[in-house]
Amino acid sequence: MKLPPYADLLGATLQWEDGLPVLAMPFSADVLGRPGFVQGGAITGLIEVAALAALGHQLAGEGGGRVKPINVTIDFMRGGRERVTYAAGTVTRLGNRIANVEAIAWQEGRDKPIASARMNYLIARG
Amino acid sequence: MKIENALSDLPGMEDVRFGGHGGRLGIGYHAHGDDWCELSLPYREDMIGDEESGVIASGPIFALMDIATSLGTMRKLGKFVPHATLDLRIDYLRPAKPGHTVIGHGECYAIKRSIAFVRGQAHDGDPNDPVAHVSGTFMFLGEGA
Image 1: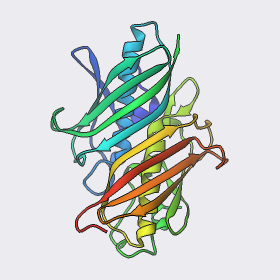
Image 2: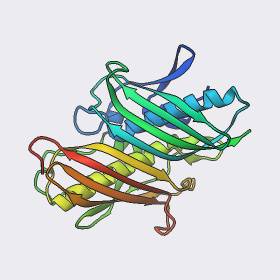
Image 3: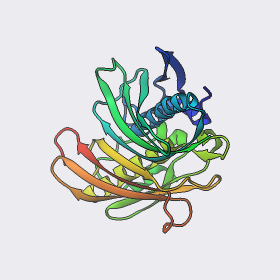
Image 4: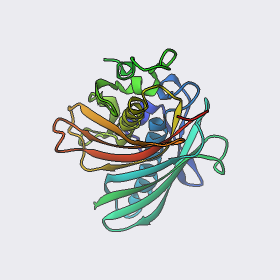
């Protein structure tokens, strides 16, 4: 799976856990928000890349397709500190035209999410 | 122009520095009013989310609107108070045109003791043809507003 240039801007890399994509973004000055914390936009960007990776992975198994974001709603639960941030998406429904995806970002562990998002995507089947 | 220009006349700004992620994205000051702020996000190839079309990823537009609505809140408050994004929803009405600068307009429409309520729109040249619409909340840290 190839990530877009924007993932490089975030410094994010793709890992695989149990056959599913997980994004990892080290802390750097490029993702800093208020002093000592990761900027919410960088966390959201990482979550969106993770959501697209999860969706792309599942879509590839069904013949592929193009994806357009419709919206994202995100809750920030904890500040992102100066350490690696991870994000992973879960496709809750993949329909013919719409996909519903949930994603979280975490640092210490998945059971302590720093942000949680849900997204709707428009699908053009390949 | 630097993002700081949006708030440079406000008390509490003495030690506040912008840079970080907003700086990496090239976000700059565009305009402001009593309860709103506009920032610019020039097109850059390293923000591309879809290489086939050259359309930028949605993340930079989210970051633009997060910062613009945050600054709009400080304008309405009339001082700088530490705050954090509680939630933000963004609707992507259409892709931003490749090569175009995106302008983000962030407005604070209500401030309560702990929470500020915000909304905003982003466009890539014509404010009447927006690319995105946001709404969300910020919480004040420490003693509150």
